[in-house]
Image 1 (tube, rainbow, N blue to C red):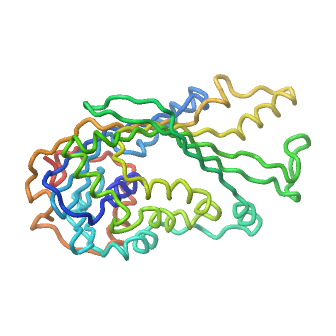
Image 2: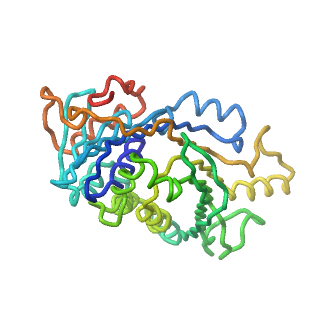
Image 3: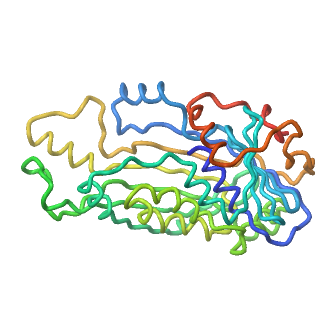
Length: 339
């Protein structure tokens, strides 16, 4: 899924008229488990799993080509032919598909969910979501660019089934329980700054309603394998697909309010949650921030597949990536096309 994040950013590029500036936008990212978990458990998870996002990723644009490097896989987008090429540098293979076919190819390449019991299927299908966006009025400066903050909130709710066997006093049948809440702050370049900075102006020209494909369609294809969650995430994905302001910084926190209810139940029964457990704290936090915005000239080789790489199909490329999804990612300088 860490590669998917970079692909979404790349797919926001459109077939808008080409301007004059080449574009390089480099981001740093970090992920950490929140204080909602006891310190010992959080350390164990952090020690046994790799970060879900690469610590650094890059987006580049030159004329009718786009490039993204997100660690395990790089991507080249051709706005003229409306094709995307995914490159696996570790195995020296690549796969090219038309953008219109990309969502289906990705969906076919991902592992299929095992059959779900009918009762569980029914519960998941009752999942509901609420999504809201508000302008906070706060501003900041990132790399000399004024940015404006918006706050996005997504809550996922589940009605308690009447026939679900639960301990006395836990939940009432039909009660609406908030299972998950995500709060994200997004800082986008102010409109005058987009006009002032050539790299931002070029980038914004490629983020428009005429983009080659709607990234929300791809994520809906992926999330469609999870009953209930595809529809729940649709409003937020639709927001990102329509937002044409360059994003330079994000901060997101994921909360599990249902855990606070469970902690209250434990205390009512005379039991104590694990030491250090804070049910009101975030379970996970993610930060992304631009550390470079440049309109320096880019070499054409960045957007070309090396001559000694071999073609394959997209499902096979992803299947070979899955077994190494938790191995250390190669440094950016070892991936073809990265300056």
